[in-house]
Amino acid sequence: MDRYVNAHEVEFDQLPLEEHDILAGRPAAAAKTLGEFLGTELGLWTLTAGTVRDVEVDEVFVVLAGDATVRFETGESIELAPGVVVRLHAGERTEWEVRSTLRKIYVAAG
Image (cartoon, rainbow, N blue to C red):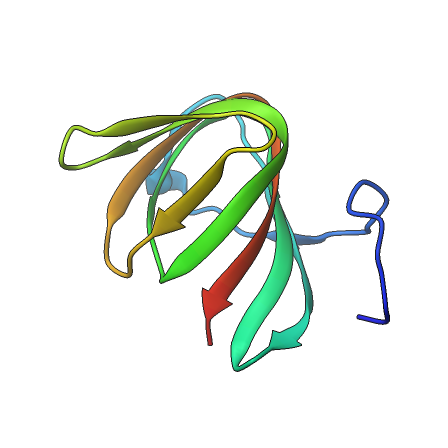
């Protein structure tokens, strides 16, 4: 990444979703790595409407756009909307229910 990027104008690279991880709808995932920052990966990620499950990495993210709920195996859930900041831990199993296309900027362990 150069000095700046407009997070709403980035061209994303499509990410494959495993059929067994798609629980509802026809969601599509995409990401764009922006570079490294102090030994971590900095990037943008997006997921269209639908429900998917995932196994997380160590990550902190800020929601830039969209409306979603992320649910954890523990029963905890977090409502995602622009401005919400979330910390994920490696190995956590999650379910993402996206109602309108979610876009986040993340910093993840390298």
